[in-house]
Length: 218
Image 1: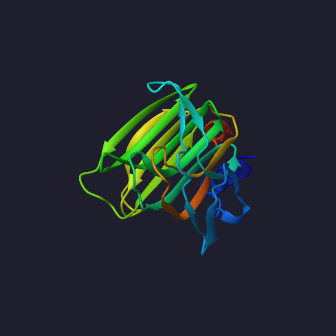
Image 2: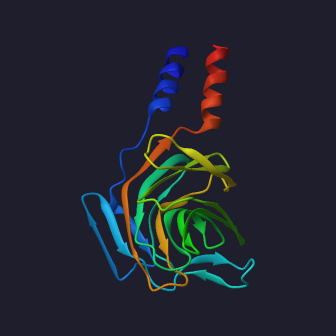
């Protein structure tokens, strides 16, 4: 039994999923123009579209393009994002979404002529946090790690060195729609590109702890 538990523990520790096949994903609010080529999704972000609920502005919108698959359990997701941002609040990034009242969107957002690392966390009402960049960037990598009831969000300029930008609550033991999104709340839309999108399965932390304790008990 001890050998079986050790083997299972080792298997779970290294088990991961290969890069998500973009063609197998699906749209929520499909944009008029988009294509997939060489495992890259390009789209023209729908004008006057966004995700936001109630707080500060007093309105709710849920109509921006979101391309996703559904995952349970714990995972890491990352993507390289490039955008031809034009108007205030033009944005592109990752989204983790349970339903219209519970979601996280995070990426890069163009505000008052500057690039910002942006995260909106929504649980019935939305909040917004930003990190201003001191200069324009040609692209950005965004990574989100879901562990138990928390999502850690990171950014990188090279896919090697990642810096954490937010830790947010998200209900655990609940399926999550995971994918890429773009929004242009004030603008006429813009071109966005998403490369190297990948979701990697992470073994459940509670189960790993159970295996470890039972392994030591043998």
